[in-house]
Image 1 (tube, rainbow, N blue to C red):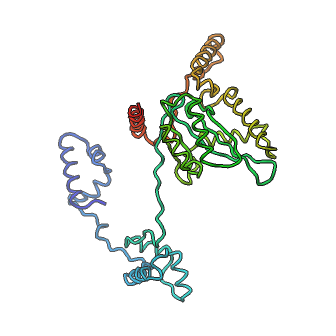
Image 2 (cartoon, rainbow, N blue to C red):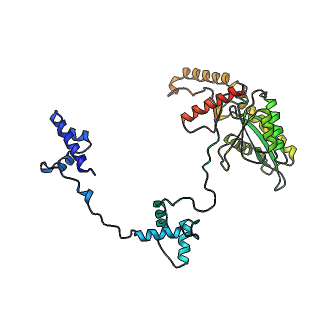
Image 3 (tube, rainbow, N blue to C red):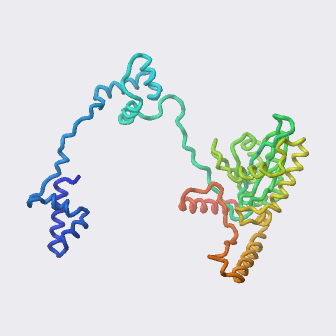
Length: 362
């Protein structure tokens, strides 16, 4: 709806455009109205106002009166109802033989009065910020680790698989199987892995969940002594540690995984050792262009992928009619993010943070 002053301005502008040589239809389109609307506004040479602005509209018969709205607000503010939502208030009023309005009306009245907030003494729901993201541009920069259960032959008994994976190469860089879950075992594994990978002078980021073993004092003290940067998932969030979770799924869906459980802890350790050898040195990982994690970890993937590129180019030259487009992209996989930010601006900011952290560490 357009009031009289705005109509007058548009009509004046259209008249000026027509005086300068524009057609009436083109001038109306430029003003954002149709020719028929202009003719209706300017009927008989006299500009008319929009009668809809002053029209009297009937009040809905089911609209709450001000007294009823006040009664709802007063009821919700009573001590016995002050900490309850309308879904609890309305049934209690019905039990007392009283009906004021529906639950939706209660919610609407409270919202219009700016009282539809958290009610009661319980803590408000928290919006947890995602954990800081880390970008791995080379091996031994970002690791993730977790613990999973390995069923034993006795029902209700389990062994515990500790496993550390490198985010950049997807290589399993450290693992142990124990009969219990503890921060002491985790600390020992981290120390052994750091020394085995030769990154004592340039320790990685180590990301984990929020379990007791992952956040135990012994492990935290050892990480601080080694200079390892700890990182943790948000509580009750399943996708902040995706690399370890995906690895454990691969572990338990191997064809030779003993679904009826391991006979003893030595059998579990032997099976995991064979799995790690297969995963690191035989398995072609889809996320790193189908090279093995060990090949990417050792820097051999560049040569392997270049050789594949040449094979494909030669095959296309031999039979170009069989290729409808470009050959398959065998460029090496680039940097890998752990918990990447949502937008490009945040990615650039976090890359700057990572660079600053590396400089500070040096």
